Amino acid sequence: MRVIFAGTPEFARVALERLLSAGFTVPLVLTQPDRPAGRGMKLQASPVKQCALEHGIAVEQPRSLRLDGKYPEDAAAAREALLAAQADVMVVAAYGLILPQWTLELPRLGCLNIHASLLPRWRGAAPIHRAIEAGDFDTGITIMQMDAGLDTGDMLLTERMAIAPGDTTATLHDRLAALGGRMIVEALELAACGGLTAVPQPADGVTYAHKIEKAESTIDWTLSAAVIGQRIRAFDPFPGASTDCNGETVKIWSYAIDSNQGISDKRPGQILAVDGSGVTVACGGGTALRLTTLQRAGGKRLAAADFLRGFDLQPGMVLGATPA
Image 1 (spheres, rainbow, N blue to C red):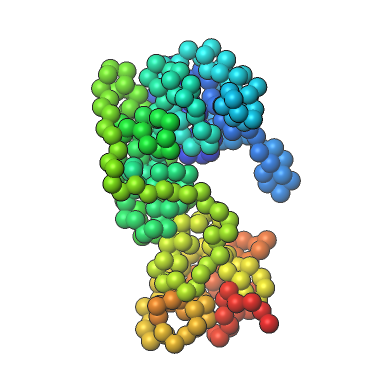
Image 2: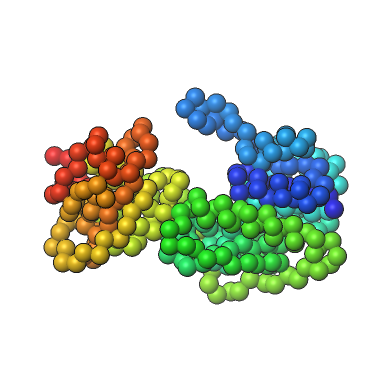
């Protein structure tokens, strides 16, 4: 079976590697254009492009696939490459471009998407982040037959995965990427013998995983400790949950729920205690959070005891407050 692969980040690279290891022929890869990255802001190839070049696979990087859009010359070149590839199917994983109808209809078996949620929950750009942020107990992978809607196509395969209490987006991402790679191989093997069954998505339970914005990173201490904790884990590694302390931004990477009671009279964001085990902060609803890994701007992630050697935090200070 000849497979065109469309994807960009590490999540997609894992799937491409699995397809190649399973022996599928991949004549063409589509991925996002190189982007500036790092301290020097030099152009950097996506993980998928790097993988493709390592395996000698042709790469196309159109800015758009819309023949009537802003970059029709990119779309036309990509169309020629897709036609020349003579593929049976296109596999799509976190590509980052909308596929127009002509693309969806081009391969004999259409386009299959590896989506990191149990559809129809968490359609959209950031399903892993949003599942953790919402406090979901589980998530999974859906292999979907793509249509013109936003993650609305029929489901072909699904598999559930538990979200551990300590999972961050980084740790859950890696497990889901591995699961997605295994499942897309299974889906294509079934497709080759006509063994895939398409099931329409339920009409109930639809939620949207909107793109993560950097502005969401600021901690709202009026929320409960549990909700703040979920956001800390959801925003690890990007954008990182942060708070202001005397005019300096500090990122919070790990925590523990503090079980102390009787703090309902404390101002949300007020530091209650500081010791080697962490910085205990009052949150909404009479709850408290002990911050155990912190990072100042330009620094490294540090355990609380090490962080406090170079950053003075004292009981009574209020995180997130504007300095006088």
